[in-house]
Length: 235
Image (cartoon, rainbow, N blue to C red; front, side, top):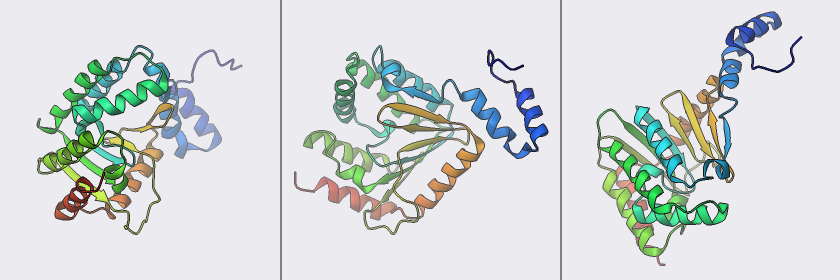
């Protein structure tokens, strides 16, 4: 009799799926069982001692990642953020969550991540909704500096940056921000939690969603023009 005292092993899951005639679901169920304890983590729990530890953990994840595909609809991805923008954003998050304020240390840890843009062996393919360029997440000076930084990183060999214009004909509805690390994990951030997705079926859906979104993005001079227009927008 199963009492639920211990999680099922891979062998248990394979046996159960075979008995139920559900072999096609085996790998997804194994991935879910392995990740169940770490799939959904509340930000307040992660930030209970401050934000710097989480930033260091993300640095470790990015160090292992060869290709990171990113779609963002709210703020620029962490590896593109300037210190001023990162400070403004982390101050807001800390105040909202009521967690310990170690913003200075967290920003310093986050800046380390930018080195992967210049080191060999890493590739960042990024899609930004045009809204990311327009939201006043930081003060006017910090926002302009952040947008100019996007222009500065675009020529890097490790970076492919596309902007999805407001006017693009959507084939995929606006989505939450997500980071697809190689083909092994997707990290999604919500208001209250970090969600890690490892099930093969869901990973395939995120990869398909990213590919479809990429077809609607502007690149090169067209992307630079959208960023330039946002920089020159009235305050």
